[in-house]
Length: 353
Image 1 (cartoon, rainbow, N blue to C red):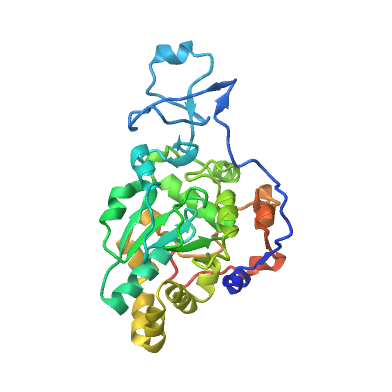
Image 2: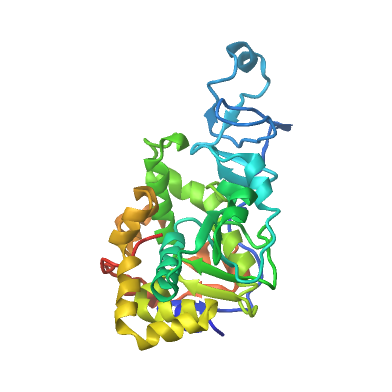
């Protein structure tokens, strides 16, 4: 199995015989008292957007709110649900839908992760490798945010990055797919800070305890971590899919650069393996410092593995270790008890993604 070494580095093991579902239901319903709520906040583009319960929408007329049998509410942190999929509230539903019409072409690389699982790190590695070894900067576009028009305008080689579960992702034998998983505890902590730091979420005063429950329930942007993992794990052995762990990359960044480039373009990998100066340049250009210059601060944070220890309290026990989280037994993915002490402070060149 291509990803076996990465699983071991991450302290993960595979139990493919465990297929039963367990835990919380990550698909949160949209009904309250039998009534489905549809509303349009000022920043949205149409009324075909659905909201789940938490915070009252202040933009509705007072008389409408008073006369409603059910208080009109929306998520906190704020997101929207378009065609059953959760998206940031600032995204255009029309643009998102156009992105779903993207049809990959030969040479395309599709980078798929759940948010905060290494998106910008792997994107930085790919771009640096092409720039150093080929003298070109690949075009890139965020499918859900920028849509089909932006993807079609990208220079080639082209990298399309997305947070879609497999069943929504445009999949084609013509393209190559990289999926990266991260320890859900660290993912939860990183996503918590991301959400607090962006005002549009209306979560500046949110607590980690509150966000922990949101994460477990799959009420974050882009849906459930666990469902995303399940959907792509089932495809991990496809010839055009490279399945990686954040912790595996962290444990051997040089080896991971070679693995990633060998999968995408074996001639680039050979070039890096033979030229130490080029390899060092790629490592430097994909470092946390370089990433912070290229991307906004909320997308590249501390550069550590194991930061969850600073947030998870006994009240959060027994989880979430990966086998205790919803849907993970169905994925056949489990942690080993000894994995906790393998997470240490990351070197400076490891962004959190």
